[in-house]
Amino acid sequence: MEFAVSAPYAVPVLVILGHTSCGAVTGTVKGLKKNPKDPSLPAEMNDFAQEIAPIARKVPVEGTEAEHINAVVRANTVAVAQGLVKRSAIIRKAVDEGTTKVVAAVYNLETGAIDWEVAA
Image 1 (cartoon, rainbow, N blue to C red):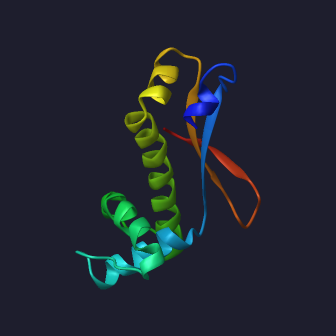
Image 2 (image 1 turned 135 degrees about the vertical axis):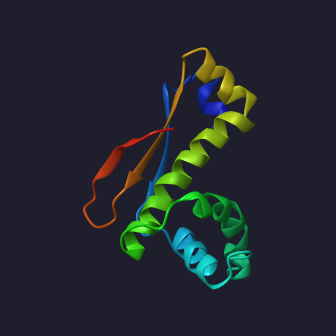
Image 3 (image 1 turned 90 degrees about the horizontal axis):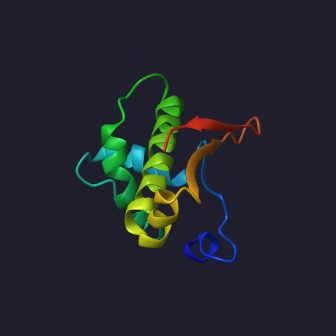
């Protein structure tokens, strides 16, 4: 992504696109229900769970399980977008200079719609 925001490309927008019913988020949320301290998932997904768990813990449990999972998807998508800007000096510089914007959005797997009203 750093390459994309640099000259000569200088893309104006980086989109971090989450999706509803995300398996990694679902597994993490269900894992936290079983063990709030460690949402261990199968080895190939455990790194994701460790990244998602702190975010999931902050999202209030409201509505159905699917609604809660999708609220965590939204929060995680925003966190990834914000984290990208924090961790990458190149992207942060492009954002600070106004040449690139980082946005978070969520793709709805059922409807095909993209929710662009996700703050980042």
